[in-house]
Image 1 (cartoon, rainbow, N blue to C red):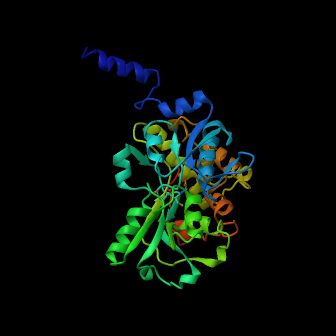
Image 2 (cartoon, rainbow, N blue to C red):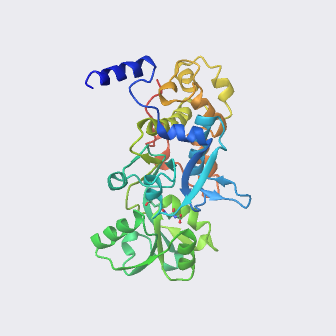
Image 3 (cartoon, protein in one colour):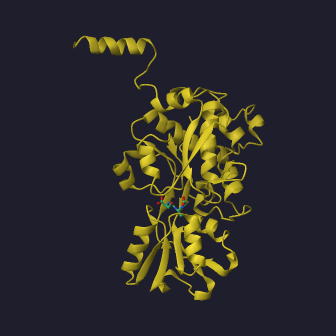
Length: 338
Ligand SMILES: N[C@@H](CCC(=O)N[C@@H](CS)C(=O)NCC(=O)O)C(=O)O
């Protein structure tokens, strides 16, 4: 028996299995012919389905990017809309391959559900939306508020901590989803709404009169949003992580969906490694050499995805802020592809 283990390892090495077993998730995705991506039930700019059944948004683009890397086809995705309360169980119970749903990376979530966040695609923070008629300038003036919030989020414990630390009273009004929260807010059942600032930008433009409400300047928490996978498949984790890093590196190197053909002819070493004309960095991930070029061609670089879905010229109109690249005043920083 003792002899058999080294023999098996020797055989595995001879057959080229390497040390890590092939990713079970990648294999399942390839055999199925599509990626199963957990997304929001409906949050403008992040994940929303139109009348024709087409999904779009910042988080949806990440699912499309993964499908492009794997299949060279961004449409090979099955979307599973999930509420805040359902999402981590759905990942843990293998109903989805990856969760891409404005989810905050916290230590507790990784431990509680056996999951791991693959990076931060959007640096956010929690804020407050109030009717202008309240004449409130700061979150410290919210004593006695009725607060609309969604359960199963980081938002609820954060706002409770903030109100208690500042000796302010509050009443919690739960909304099961964005539509419920908007209905309660517009009916006056709550007089402040709180969630990630990006979510408030999305929600405000869905109100009957967006200009009657304002987002207070105070940001009370860190909400690093990103995709998550199960802890049991390191190769899959690496695929998700490097697809995200590739999009950020592409922006930094000036490679976009519009310039990808030029990039494939580029002589710049960093560009050649990114688009796969030098080396074969996709191989250990189980991907083809042009994995990142596929992503950039089909979905775009980080700036294209940000601008299209949530940026200043989109419906949401969010400035890049913290999500600028590290060399442009922000904190988006991807390890090099080399
Ligand atoms: N980032 C926070 C909040 C995420 C969240 O679920 N936000 C709400 C309010 S913007 C949402 O997306 N709701 C949409 C839905 O009902 O599915 C977290 O991870 O807990």
